[in-house]
Length: 88
Image (cartoon, rainbow, N blue to C red):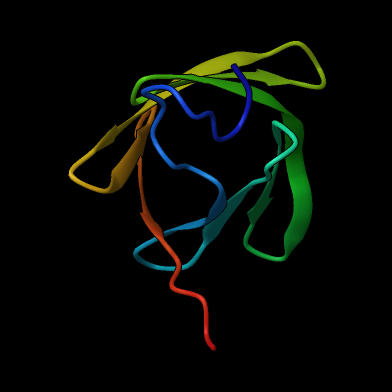
């Protein structure tokens, strides 16, 4: 399951940001992610899969991590990220 799937996967596609804006994680519909840290664009890139509200990440370097969506908030390892609202 990658990105946003029809059966029981959380809608995760979009930009997720820490409260201070330092970390910005874009989860793309193609199952790829791009994470910026401060002024360092694309600090981490890789792929992710979604099972229910759980996310498994595999960085392009081979590093793995996990996350969970709880009450609309992404808990990614030690980080707490909030969905960035799109401006219309």
